[in-house]
Image (tube, rainbow, N blue to C red; front, side, top):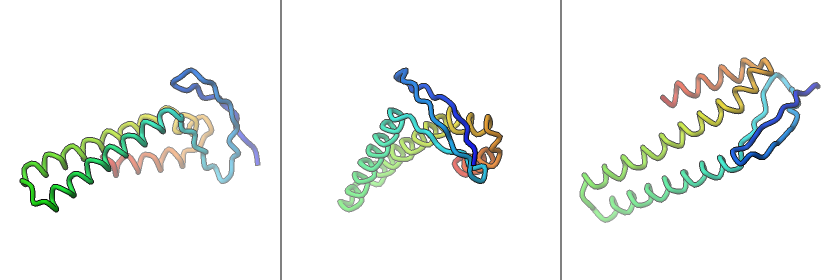
Length: 116
């Protein structure tokens, strides 16, 4: 089992060097802690919006208002998906290509096709 060592530079300028052990050509994942925190915050906001929509339906509120709130939930989730795609492209896919892990690239392409 061999490994590939590379360095990530976080948005805060921190430098992280690590080695991915290559097992069956599956590329490891690194996620910037600050970006991960932003993504989790986006999920929390979307859950809050969705809980609000649930309450609106339970309280028989106006359907137009419910749809407006659902639109906000959809927008939040699409924004999260775009952020995940950007993060994955910047780090995981870049390193997968450097490591020759085309399987990871193909899997990501399929996931993006499902998203769009």
